[in-house]
Length: 547
Image (cartoon, rainbow, N blue to C red; front, side):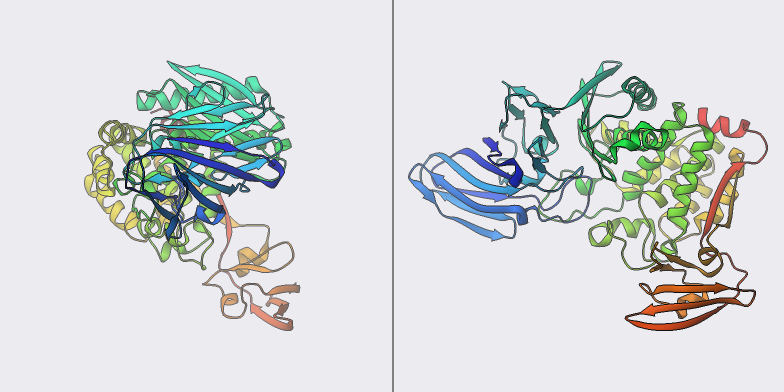
């Protein structure tokens, strides 16, 4: 089968798509458009962007019936070639969407291409009708100038493409793999420095997993003029969208680039190949509930950062800042008291990528990473580390392609553990339930020569009264244990306030009405700062880096 994709008027952001396939006589063709994509366990309903789907065959127009919100069927009365034509509005510029403008064509095929029942193993060609001066960044092989070839549907929808005239391309090599770095947009960073650091964290990751079974891998990066941060993993590539582009002329921007790139490369093994059974194989027509978010994203978040420390890009001080930021994001909500990371993983389809109601859930990314930090410290009692656990997961569940369940990961961790009772207790209290991870880390970090302290920040309303506002004074968050929780409401706007020894006097506007609210002085610490530092010298932490 063959797709032909064109952009007659790029400024309209409309893709014109035609799918050609050969049909048998009296064959029922079932077209299923994905409703979600790998790397984001959330219904996206891509069919909402389709306009005017039509089918034609040897005798002209064929009736196509819509069966569900994203599925169509038609009947091939005669044997021969049939064409499915439709338009797609490509106006989502992030790492998982599709975007067309006069300067580029960027497509995630998972957004626009149909799975055909019973025919998903067929070879698929995609002809891109592009301006003659456009370059193409994609993991799929090219046949001729602009025709991509996928061995089957799964490979097609896991291989995004970016085409543009202005497309920077650099390479570096680690062992037998060529790593391609494609950038669209303004480049403000130094290429030699960036490639050097990419090479370093790539070497460290491959060293710990043992191999990297592909000849080519592609980093496809959009440098955007506005603030943005997003990445999506694929079998042989990753798409990363970052901005603002000028930020990447300095260390702050480079830290963001290195952080997301190391994270996404780690996904080459973890998720793209070491995959939970619940998404093995992918069925994009419906939800695929999973309990393994801790491994899929928690391990990846922790290890992606750790390899920047291990490769020498992060100083220890910078790594401490990374841990402190994880703690702030994880502990400054009390969701951990109400939902375990296992339950939060299951609920990804419900509210996993939205703020959600106050203090309901934990993040499989930030809370997951801190859980993995705790596991890694516990493993050190036996001289073992998390990277060894993941190499075993790679050998048992990644290379074999059989998939794993949460219990398989737990058992693998236990196999590397000196104190099995301690680790079993850890899983029961902190993975399956809602144990206080902050208290645990305060007790564990001294094992690697570090201390953890929570202290008041420079915003007294946050630290002393449990009130967080935006820059306009509108309430975003109220600590549920603070007296403010019973007197203030989310979206109240603070007009003015007065601090004294007796407490806090507020003038607040709520739904057009002005109120006066008094809060008593408190000795409790609500929202604060987290500080990670050496206890004495750095020797214990040096062992943590290099063991």
